Amino acid sequence: MPKGMAAIAGLILAVSLVLPAAAQTPAPDDVTGQTQRGRGKEARQAERAATLFSEAATTYAEIVNLCLTDRAPAVRLAIASARGELTRLQPMLKEEALAALQNNLASMETFEAAGNLTSIALTASESFKTIVTAMNPQIRRTPIEVSLHTYQAFRLVTLASAAEIDWPAVTQSAKESEKSWITLRRMVRDTHLRVLLSEIQSGLRDAVSRNDAASVKFAARLQVGSTAVLRDFFERFARSMARGTDLQR
Image (cartoon, rainbow, N blue to C red; front, side):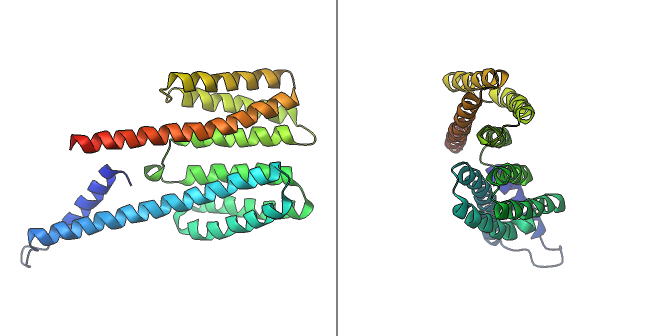
């Protein structure tokens, strides 16, 4: 949980601990100790939630990767793992997100029985998107725009890797990828990184316009890799900002 939110939670807790005037008021040290414990509990709960969401998102990303590398037995195990993670996440999910994830898992199990890895990967991509958008914004470690750009990259690399390529779907996904990059580009302050990622998008556009399957697949894989670089960039930026805040105190 961000420090500002932890401070607010601590303040609420401190106010709730104030007893009626007729009762005995706790000593200042007692209130401070209780407030600090409240902050610690809030921080631990936020960290646990962030970890559960991150693990679930990572599992769906791994399912996409396993499908693309034709590792069917491992896909089956990963789907089972995703079902277990959903059970742990259930208390933190709204009904709509929970229903979508349950339906997607059922679909993936059906596709797995039929050996349809492309459909599994596309469904896992949708589950990845559902997970990252369902996460409380206060516990995200990177901007949601990075995760949505990752989702677009997963769809593109899966569509481009299919035995029979659905070019209208590829074209639409490439357009959505471009939109997500335009939104994200404003947030990337590193000029060299911004230029590099813009070149990847340019290469993707050109490949799609030519219906060049090999080049689309290559560009999509570069886009998948670029999202990892983006996550690292934003996490380093967040850490530097946190250190700066600590130094100002």
